[in-house]
Length: 321
Image (cartoon, rainbow, N blue to C red; front, side, top):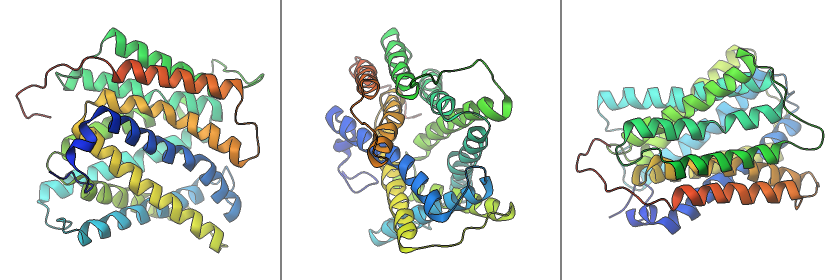
């Protein structure tokens, strides 16, 4: 039996493939950190120019969605033959998981430090684990799972706290508050997407989700005065790479969530800022093998091990998932 990605369903339900594919997704998302910075530099987008950033993100996700839908159509999937209620569900998913989450995150990031933004964004894993505890009988919160999340979160803090750069106690709604809201929106939307993937092909679902969300971001950025000029072969190639990484990572992630417990998959999110820091250091010519990076990687992997090796409860007979 094939999954929505064209790969056998067993690929996503086996632990070793879960680890490999989830790590690949996080590596791809982590590579977006230096790619976004590079794109802003090539196109002259200022850090404070939120409207232009939304336009750039809109093109990225719109192209990623279009790529997936074309691939789905070519492989015989039902791209257009969806029920009215499914169109509404896909619209809600795209609005929340791509557009709304992205706006909250970037407005929040503009009003706080990058260190606090990265750390607070990692709270999304806690939200996912807590929501899954109440929604799925086979995904209850345990001491081992809580410990794994705490160790992973500590790893995220280690990789972000460098030198004399520390954390202050300041908390504002438009800054730290919006980062936390973005993390919650993404967690809730991911679980909602898990439910939709039981009835809609994951590739089709992800394609429409990215396309709808990307279009909303693009129109919102243009309405806000966002204007990107000076496209070059380099910036177009970078945009193309980001569209491909989004298409691949989001599709694989949706398939992993469909076939596994939420907690087992979302704990890998702790790897994203670690990969982001490592790849940013690599491309910026900084020392990659610093003790901070290595310690963070060990801690995050330890947290993932604690969660993914937890004994799995029997699956309920009900098909509510």
